[in-house]
Amino acid sequence: MLYSVKEVEKLTGITVKALHHYHKIGLLLPCEISDAGYRFYGEHELEKLQQILFYRELDFSLKDIKKAMDNEPNRFECLTEQKELLLARKKRIARLLTTIENSINTTKKGEIMDKSAMFKGLNKEEWENALSKQKKYIEDKYDYDILKTEDIDVEDLNKKAEEAQQFLKSISESLTSGIKITDEGLQNLLKNHITFLNDNGISLDAESFAQQAKFFLEDDFHRNMLEAQQVGLCYYLYAAAEAYASLK
Image (cartoon, rainbow, N blue to C red; front, side, top):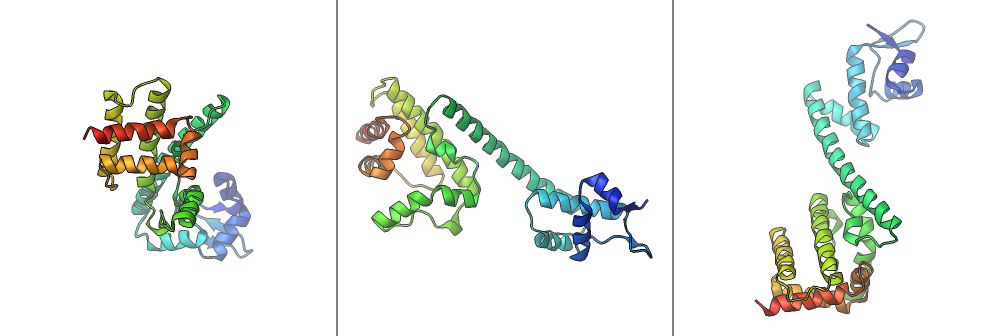
């Protein structure tokens, strides 16, 4: 069965203009052109168009779509690859929707959202933007580059941001509940957090973690970042970290 450009437009939602452009750049050729110049598409072309639309959903440029499809040996492998890419996007969108929902809820309550929670589910470019102020501050004040953008591991950063969110939330709740810094439950929170960091490529012991907490307390940028989440959080975290280190 053959379909005219109008029929394809009605069937897929792709405009006639887009179909003509796809033809012009060699991305999707009609299977037949009538003597009058009308373009027609068959089942194979519709399958190919489906693949193009999947790639477009993944924000591939037309140039990259053509390159990807030229390198695909068959439809099955192409669809399998696209499925994996779409599932990865679905997972990321789910994280972003959770982040947005949390942002909406905290805004309604007049609260300030945990900074780490604000960055859950970001991609590489979004992480670069999110960390740009902190990166510039550290470079200007301490002449140290905290982030080499070419080394950004998006999944790793998202995982660490999620853990950091939960950790700081628990510390903040301990503070507002009046829990002593020597409390066993609070000390276990620090222990588990340090263990997580060590398991994920950040080498810290109790003493170095306490030094890091002291740096956060003494540095304006990081102290303000923590205090924006909960007044007294930065000092409380430092005192708890010092107590933890002294027990080791």
